Image (cartoon, rainbow, N blue to C red; front, side, top):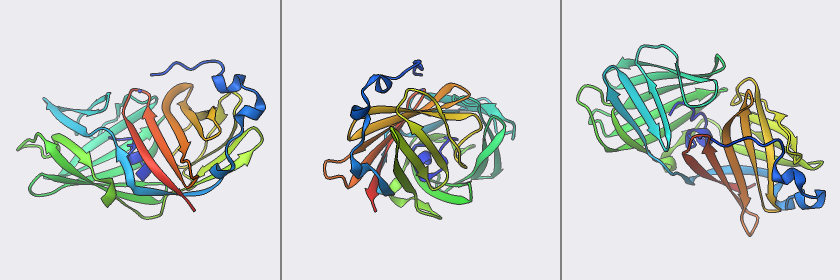
Amino acid sequence: MHRNISILSLLCAMAFAAQPQTQSAQREKGQRELDPAFFGKWKLDIVKSRVDHPMSYEQRGDTIEYRWGTEHDSFKLDGKDYPTSMPGETTSWKQTGPRTYESTLKVNGKVLSKRVREISPDGQRMTITMQRGGSTVVVPYQKISGGSASNPLIGTWRAEPASAKASQPEVLTLERAPNGINYNRNGMAEFSAEFDGREHPMSGADVPPGATVRLNWINKREFGYDSYVNGKLSWKRTLALSPDGKTIAYTVTGAVGGSTVTTWEKQ
């Protein structure tokens, strides 16, 4: 719902225990090296990407309950901040027209994104326009069940990523670093980290205050990283290189469930 903030995040748009040291930190240095094909620039292929779970909104009195995978959040259309299932995150909603809704996502009080949801006159399609970090992303959704005469938002919706649009392409840059990597996604999220089992700082427009990342070496053709906000796990990510080295399957899983898989092509 609220945390989908770039095409990757939007389609991406959750509880694991943090260990003092990951398994990767215990491996020998030579085993932590990645395939050289990982390094370079990668462009998101949204047509080949997918969202594993639809999202749903259910009316409970004057409260709306949102579900995506195992995420379960509640809010009212009164413009006030309500906590979500993500650490330090809040969302505020208001209805601005018969079929339009605006929401604001904050982490630790910092505004990260704003969204406008517009629902078609027949109530069967919804367009979400998100603004964040100077970028605008538009993703259409199709209603697959449910409905309410008084509130067209109510029901279950499935994203149509093949029709999504962004004001700028999603480009991921991976660079080799001593015993680790330099990561940069459009300047929206970036970090330099080692496979040492420790948390390293993150920065960028997509990154909330107090965010850190811990790298996980899996094998030469696959690695992951866990992101934290004030020491609490928020997202787990895995990047797997294809056999021909031309694509990356990028899986994002939230700390309480729900996942997306995006495809990135070598540039």
